[in-house]
Length: 612
Image 1 (cartoon, rainbow, N blue to C red):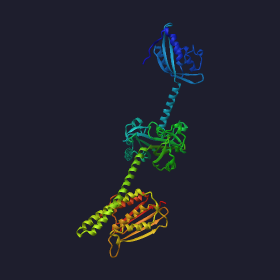
Image 2 (cartoon, one colour):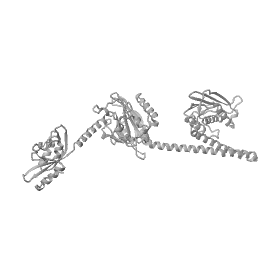
Image 3 (cartoon, helix red, strand yellow):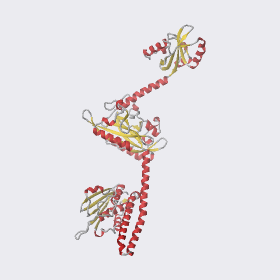
Image 4 (cartoon, helix red, strand yellow):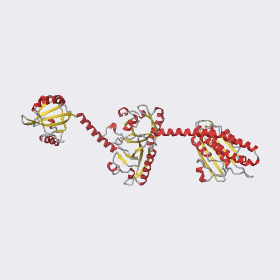
């Protein structure tokens, strides 16, 4: 808006000047810019007396700190009788500089028929210094973002670039925004990056991987890429952060950066996730606003403190061990796996995070950057799922036991009926007995399956001799057992600790399979089951061999699947036995191996840890 001419009526001069003098910083100059009057506030601001100013040229209207263009515009405006506004500066005798928001108003003196200039001022020195510092800081931050040894992209769920910290390839930031990140890589890397973006977006978990690219000179360059989801309050993925770092280079940050803040490694313009920078001793040097919000500390409260302050006391020892292992892997140029930490906020609130650790060397000093993702919601869902699974397993365990008693009772009643009933009903009773027996076997299988979880924490000294004897007693009713030779070789001098119930289930199911799928005895040869057990300080090796019909090669990898049956010659099985065996071995942190030859037999080798 253009300034207007101001004419001060002579009758109001004294009253108006008195009010201005009491409440404002102001001056009155003649048409040549010489001071005719200065307010007390103006003198206090310049730390001088009015006697030294009145009659002298108004230095503020011609400061050496301002360009000629500014003053040409100022004088042209007020000479035209218009108001001028802008920031002017004045250097004090002590060398300090004042910055004043000045309004210069031309006033027509009706008595002297001349123009005078009244100047109204507001001290904006502090604001000017703050703005100057912001400008310097913004310029430094821009230089810092450009000097960062990696690129950080903010993308949509589908890889579309929303923001990026600096140019990538031969594209400026403005050219990158709106394009797709994987379009800047070779076809192999394109597919890998795209599939990982889809994986993180759907799974809501961070993922780190490596790619290789050929540069313009046909040299191979390796890149480490970390993709992390950005979640809304409801746990939905709203965007992704993609960090790309070349693995083979060591970078230094611009020397003009202050020594204590050289390696912040924080992408401030994309304010998502938790990013913490530490020195080689684990002391926090920088962190972003995401970390401040999560841990509730201000920068002044946390910088210089050890990282352990942010880790829960109850899991600090194990978490530190994982962090040290990750740092060691980085030093050995190995991939550092994602780590789960149990963190602690200022208000003593504990929450889990997923952490990806990276490092770089700055002037021979190594620093670490920890990118974290709060996984509280994911953990809550996992815990709910575990509880549901536990409830279901308990229901299965109780239900299978509740079913066993009625089945056993029904079988006993049918056997009594067969003795008392006429011959014509024997076939029907046999059919009912077989049906009830299958129901009893199914109940037993379900009971064994539920036993895996319910009993896995129980541990005691194992008596292998007793387990094997009890197993053959339970299987004494098997039709094929009478014609089978058994060989037992037990070397169990070393005490072995494990879960007795679970081991009994293993022996029961493997031996039962060996009996059911044995070959018919001949005059010259009987089928044989060999059981070998040897215990050590750290493990036990169990081997059960048979001379049965064997397993086809294409079935070897399927025999542990739920409801898979190797052969159809026996209709009594349900495909639960070997599934239960494999599940028990896995839960006991063991291994199981199978070798088989058709028409010659099968060997199961089971290795279990000693839980003493």
